[in-house]
Amino acid sequence: MFHLLDKPRTVARPDYNRWLVPPAALAIHLSIGMAYGFSVFWLPLGQVIGITAPAAGDWKISTLGWMYTLFFVFLGSSAAVFGTWLEQNGPRKAGVAAAFCWGGGFFISALGVHLHQIWLLWLGSGVIGGCGLGLGYISPVSTLIKWFPDRRGMATGMAIMGFGGGALIGAPLADRLIRHFATPTSVGVTEAFLALGSIYFVAMLCGAFTYRIPPAGWQPHGWTPPANQQNRMITQGHVHVKVVHRTPQFWLLWAVLCLNVSAGIGCLGMASPMLQEVFGGRLIGETASLAGLKAGQKAAVATLGAAFAGLLSLFNIGGRIFWASLSDHLGRKRTYLIFFALGIALYVLAAAAGSAKAVILFVGSFCVILTMYGGGFATIPAYLADLFGTQYVGAIHGRLLTAWSTAGILGPVLVNYIREFQISRGVPPEAAYHLTLYLLAGLLVLGLVCNALVRPVHPRFFMSETELEVERKALKGVQPEATVESTRPSARSWIAVSAGWLLVGIPLGWGLLITFQKAATFFR
Image (cartoon, rainbow, N blue to C red):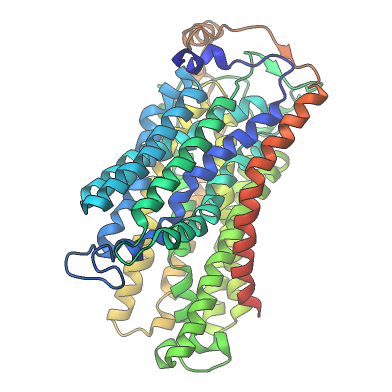
């Protein structure tokens, strides 16, 4: 059975329909995207002993929050460590490994809840689950780029959109499972972990076994590479993953990703309290600050804060496919120029809107900012492929994701600690975010400079034709071939494509519907 995971067994025939690969990638990314929705477990996990309220011995939310930190630390580190292994063994084996890590992490966490051992939750969901995140996140990237050389941005955007949308499905599903399994003697989290682990394990296995890689030299039917690729910073060569860290372009893109994510992730995590504190009663037609509202009024403001967070999630997801697809026409460097230049203006505008109590302008600014936050994730794999070639783009992308791990710490620290520092100096809570927004704009200025410095990679870093042939032969027996043009897919294959998109589209549509309903509260 294990021979089915070998890379040569995943090489597709020339008539394979490449549109089967994106839904397979989405099946995995929608599963691991639940990492963004793990906060739904914090309150019930904090009442495992007390059941209806926290009791002596129950875990604090600050203790549970380490799972979230471990997610993204091990996502970046595992992607960096196992990126080369993925290229050598193929996306199917990596996808299966991700399924065992992510699904198994839920099972270990369920045992941790049952035994009330916090270290098992950290190990299961944080460490092992985090490794599953890293493997699952990068597993389809190089595959999609090779299948869609004509639409690199759109292809990776479709998959990475799933990571942003996973919580839209997972969070409400987890909430329903917890309430379904809850009893007078149990909060229902153990059973919910077991159910979710099983669901995600099966979904990820289905996605992994659907993965195919194109034959070496494959090209889409009727497509020829553009003649002006040099002007668009798209290389014909390939940089080895062991050499890429010697290029200035790698470190410039590392900084570009880190700075773009740092600015967005800090605000995404504080979106709801920021809106409530900046505008307070003005959200419901009152003039009082948040502290001066009555309990019922605070509840109404909190509802709008939650709706704002849901609205930002929708724009985060939409931005991943929109900006990544647009980058196929604008070019990656120009797309990131827009991210930084427009982002700087919008952060300054948001600070001014907060001072002027202009709610719609404030909300609109952050909606656009979050599209570029998501778009940054989705565009970076194609940027890497343009500069370094496609031979090791998955491994290179894995190493670059250490920038995400860094940003996951830097962004929230900037937003949270600067706010606390401001308040400790007597600044009112509604004004405590202004300095933070200006500092985040400053991060984007640095990102703008780094992106402007990106130039085509020097030819000395590219592998020679002989070196490239040796590398391809070493990749588990997948032999290099002459250019292979695909044949037109059969009509029957489009039935399979439709079925694949339905299987991932129905749950995603359900999650989007729930989020739309929550976000609609903001406009009532």
